[in-house]
Every structure is written in structure tokens, then in C-alpha cells.
Length: 435
Image (cartoon, rainbow, N blue to C red; front, side, top):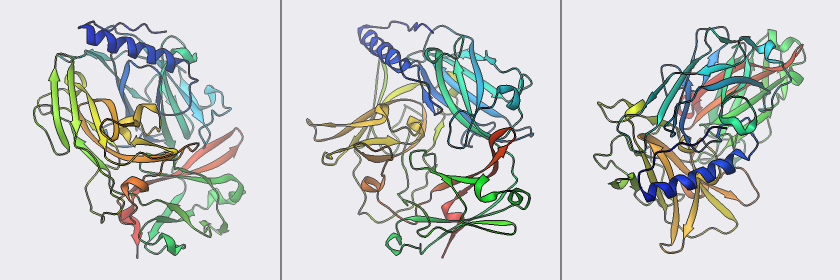
């Protein structure tokens, strides 16, 4: 297990670091999941994206020269040679039964040894990055994959974080539209119904209704993802998905945002920037619910984050961190919790992004430790006992909302048995909507 070796600045830092270590120990006690999760509190700002564009999803085409870039910061002051491996998964993110020799060519484990120490940042950190697939590890099969980063071995207590990515072999053509009038007229001007058709002769020649399934994701969310959607009928070279009520998502609203690329000025939505010996504290303007407000098109990046420092800074090693304070003015909800939702907390509805009602100020408060950049987010309500967030209660529900959707088409191969990713399409709801 990696030993935390933070520098000691003053008593305040010591308290913070002790708490961080306790959180790290608690996190390590959890079982490692096939999810976008960080298990070591020292690890911050994990990014995995299509090389060349930080905002592009981690998807590569099988057999191509496509590459993915991984980067992250370690708040330790000692460098480590971290290791990584790739794990093939089923379409619902269970570890597949395939031996690595079937889906990997070359080594089954690699080293992450490209790192740089931060410059003049408080607290200091070490920035790591990796580009893969590479000459040492290549991917032979399509499907869902988990990137697992660890120290020494893959035992749960040594795993630092996991990240999902996709390898696609584009064999199926996807046709999709979002009609203004859905099948259920109660959803008019609120929900977004996806009408879906697949085309692909060769794929449909053998048990297509049994072997084909579709997952659909809205923006970067997994909590409300539609999983294992089966075709309802087949016509020569096409599969239809004609459900009685349609495939429906909440329209929601445009994402809220704040620009924290510089700490020298307060951009829109930032109320105050506090700088002292311990670093930065960024206080956002108080948010209010907007379910009854008219729809307004605010440009966003569909809930993602862009890690970028001000001009003249090297973001990787000179970007600084800040505690960001979120405030939401609304009555306390009974039998439900409120969470921040977006790439700023890896789209996880967990304790890290949970808003806590503060009786002293009669509003909700939350805080996240974030690196300089531009961030989108929403507030999601999760009723007790449930795992899916409802953004409509606080954010509103509009058909016009500019959501990004991703369609994943899987084909169940029998020998060897695994889920091939044979279709992939990412689109904006405005681009395909029809009257």
C-alpha cells in the first residue's frame, strides 16, 4: 500500500492531512468496482479522454491508431511507479469471463512512469500521464473496458482508481430522432423520447432479437442510463425499437457552470475568492431552484469539465487547487438527499458530492476540492433507498434542453462468449430533434 507523505505546512494543514488519511483508509476498505471511482484520497483530477481533445469521450475504434490519454495528480511528495491493466467487461459492466490473452496483445500489465513535480502549487503534487494502447499493450476485441491503476499488484487495497472506456467496431448503423410530440402526451414540452432504428445486414442474420442489445446514456450520467434495451421487431436488414411509451429521458435543463481558470479575478457565478497560506477557497453565488422558470438556452459543455489554468500557465504542473463552496437556497427535503452531479465529481451520487442542510444559514451547502478549470454541474435529488437522481425537482424539465446522448450497440458473441460493441453514436438532442 502506498504511504502518504504529505508536506507539513502548519497546524491547519496537519489537521486536514490527518482527516484525508483517515478518509483514504476508509475508502481502501471498500471493494473495487467496475466504475469511475477513486480509492485513494491522494489522487485528484483523474482524466481519461480521446487523445488530442480533453472533452472527447474515451472511445477508440478497434484496430485503428486511436489512442486514449490518462492523466491524474498525486498529492504525495514522493513519486511512485504506478501500474495499470485493462479489464474486459460485459455490456452491463460485469467483469467478463475472458482471459486477458483473448483481448490483449503484448503485456497484460504496464507501468506509468511519466511524471512531473508541480511548481509553486499549494499543496504540491505530482502529475502523471499515460497514452494507450501502445506498443507494449494492444487491444484485440471490442467492448466495454475498465482501466485499473494500482501500486504493486491488483489487490483491492492497492488500487488507486478505475476508469471506464470503450472499444468499438462500427458494424451497425444507428438512426435516431427525438420527436416534439412523444407517444405519451403527458411528456409534451418536458421529456425527450428517443426513436431508434438499427441497420446492419450481417449482424441480423443470426438470432438478432436475442443477441443484440442497446444502452443509451444521457450526457455523462450512468445513474439514469437505459441498459439492455432489446429490439421489438426485425425487418430484413433493420431492427426496430418500438416501445409503447417510447424510450424516454427527462429533458432537464442546461447545466449550471463556473469558470475557475484564474484566481486573479472573479468570473460570473463566483462570489468570492479567498487566498491565504493554505491555498484558495472559491465561494460560488448562492443557487436557487428553477423548475418553474422559463427555459433559457445557456451554452454548456454537457456536464463535463475542462481542466485549464490561465494563459501562460502549464496546467499540468502549475494549475492550483481550491475548495469550491456550493450553496443552494431551498427548504430542507424530507426523505431525500441532494447531490452535485457532473464530471466535477465523476458523475457519482456519493458522499463526496452530497449537499448538507445547514440550519444556521437555512440552506444547503457542499464543497469539492477542484483544480483550476471550467466546470458544469446540476443538482440532483435522490429519494431515500433509490440510486437514480432526479434533476427536474430543482432544475426543471424542458424538451428544448440541449442534452448529449450516446447510443451503444452490443452483439453477444458465442465463441468466445463476450459482448462486442458493434455500434456507437454520440449526438446532441438539438441535432436530431424532429417536429
